[in-house]
Image 1 (spheres, rainbow, N blue to C red):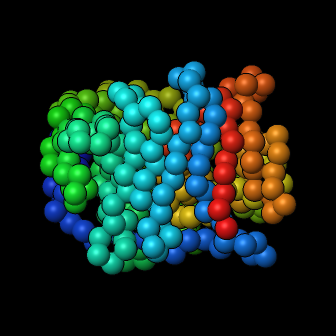
Image 2: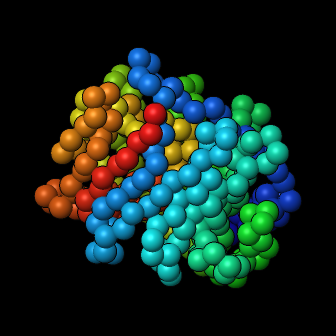
Length: 273
């Protein structure tokens, strides 16, 4: 398996570093709801410090950065790059401004229907801040492959994981959607060296409100969350059903909320319309 995967994945990575043919669909507009943008995430992080993360957009209403007040190792800022046709190209988890190093970087390849099919992930390298171009990758390397249904929802993520140049495992996550439009079952299967296999299922429980991931396709992609509703019950919602305040501390099954590349114990979301 190792011999078969290596040439294919590294060929993909080399192509991605030279290619700019990624695409981005327009923002999702929720029926009967004003156009909203998420502009700030504020709360207690799982690293147990309070932070306020500002989200900025370009003139095409596409997000370009998510920047907290404490950029550090294990807690980067995220910069989103597009090509001249406003198509998604990269997301870079960078260190403080002026530092040419990143902690994690994603390079995307899309299909003819403008859906992200391949996500090449590089850990600890350098990039050009002015162009958001990945220049080196110094440590581990991953490739994720995405599969979709006829509603353009991700149904499966196949993650080929490496440690340096050594093959580690393949993690396959499969999403099963119900008639309400929610991923009611999520299966994760890990195949390790020697074909050792483990598998587990998760069964999220949803509220009946609007999932803010629907506000932009990038939010759906980065969290792989295409569900119509939220897999939590918020403390409060706005008049349109978007969650405002979420507290996970009282949920013994989860205890944290992974949202837009950050992890929180409690979270307050600010929107702009």
